[in-house]
Every structure is written in structure tokens, then in C-alpha cells.
Image (tube, rainbow, N blue to C red; front, side, top):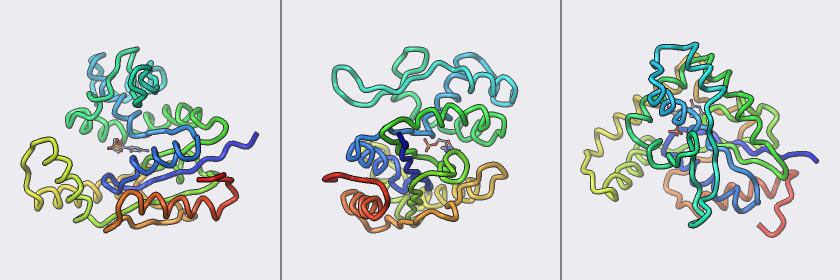
Length: 230
Ligand code: DC
């Protein structure tokens, strides 16, 4: 059976995580959060005292780390396990995020994670969320979507999240951070953040989550993928 792969790439704050999960659940597809793999590697390195400069050991760890994505048997919410331990919240730490960004810039690490990412493509299909899903990991994907939003809008979304968590931060600082992260992600040598030449770009600025989901579902409906009553 043909496995349909839908790739959703884009910068952080574009809404791709939320949209990818909603799309996967709407289609009954598997979901790959590729950013979580880089975050898991950063956490595994910290636990095993592997330096983020030790490229060889990091690549070995990337290929062999014991990870799992599953639904919480009690609550039904998605959880991420490292060596059997639930690390769903820990991998979202700022420190782990900074480590993930460092390990993600190492070619040998990205290579070691390629097959692990491709193994997520199982029937009936996969929604793969990341930065290089359509360009490198699944170049033959059935549908490629590139989600984006203006730096101001992405900073505003992050601002709302942080305020929701009771943290106070300046919006101007966040806009600056978003711009410099874009600069770094789009200009790195290996797997830079770029839309695949055959990707459909969706600008989510000014759109709500249901509105973006509708745009994406429309793209799927106009493709060879059967969406049933979605
Ligand atoms: O999407 P995220 O914030 O969870 O990603 C964590 C880090 O991994 C971030 O620095 C971008 C990087 N990443 C990547 O280089 N390639 C991917 N396919 C996914 C994430």
C-alpha cells in the first residue's frame, strides 16, 4: 500500500506543530515531530555527559538513543519518552531548545537521524513537521506545505504564550529574537530552512488555527489523497 506523506515545514511560531497534529488526527495519519528528535538528542547528551562539541559520540547517540512517541494510556495526550521516562515537558526547556539548535547544525547528526525519521512513514500515511521534511527527509512526499507568518506575528504568538505562563517579556525583544533565529536557520550550511521548490506556501499571519487548518485541508482535498469526510 502506498504511504502518503504530507510535509509541513516552516519557522517556529508559524503554527506548524498545531496544524500538523490537527491534520494528522483529521486524516488518521501518523505524526512526526522532527524537532522533538533534536530536543531528545540534546537531553540524552546532557544525561550521558556527551559534550555538544563531540560530533562522533553525538552521531552514535542520535542513531541509538532509546526514544518513543506514544499516547498517554490514561489521559490520551501525546507523550515523548527517553529511555522509558516521560520527558514531554523537559524537552521544551529553553536550555534543551538551545542544545537542540546546536546539535541540529551538525551534518553527522542529521545523517544519523535520517532513517529514524523515514521509519515514521507507515500506512495509511504520515504528517511530518519540521524544517527540512520536504527538502531532505521526504523529497518524494505527496504534498509539501511551507507554513510561515511575519516575524511580528510570530513574536506576538510567543508573547501570548509566555504571558499565559506568567512570564513578562518585551515584545520588541521577541521580534528581535525571531529575526535573528530566522537569519541563523535560513543561512546555515546544512539543511537550511527553505521552502522546497514544489511546496505550497501558506502565510498564517492574521489567521486563526481553524482558518489555517481549513486552507491546508483544501490543499489536501485538491490532491490525490482521499480525505473521506474531512
Ligand atoms: O521545532 P523545534 O523548536 O522543536 O526544533 C528544535 C530545534 O531543531 C530547532 O533549533 C530547529 C531544529 N530542527 C531542525 O533543524 N530540523 C528539523 N527538521 C526540525 C527541527
